[in-house]
Length: 169
Image 1 (cartoon, one colour):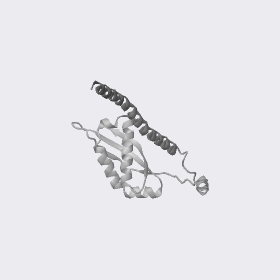
Image 2 (cartoon, helix red, strand yellow):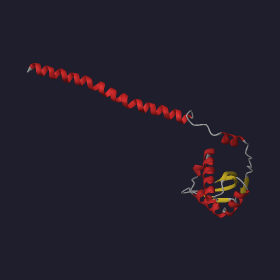
Image 3 (cartoon, rainbow, N blue to C red):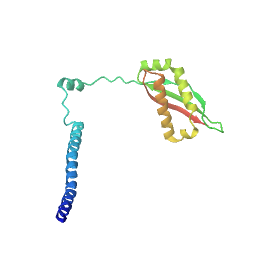
Image 4 (tube, rainbow, N blue to C red):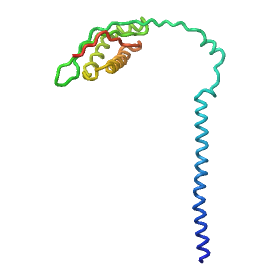
């Protein structure tokens, strides 16, 4: 009986030692495909495995395309709006011009001017004076006005809003 217990103890110890080796093998068997997949993805996205375009596409893209990028500037009416400043009176006066890609976009922008002025004024009324401080505030204001101008003048594309005057009091 003692011999049986000794053998049982030895087999338990042998199994205990075998388990870490088994888990290492499982880890290796799982890690190798993942590693190979990651290497394959890196090679694919680096462009090494991507096929070369047909010669006709290469020749067509090699020809210089005429660039007709004459921006058109549309003057905006002066906008004066109260700012969101509880407990005090603050306002902004904004003079600006909107840059569009061409004459067709300028005509679409002129047709949408009442909507554009409304969107600009509504946005300006929600701004706090602290948000307009510094160049970062001006940059955020420009980005927001461009986004609203693109919504109002769609399908025309507004490329920039240029400030002629910004007065915050």
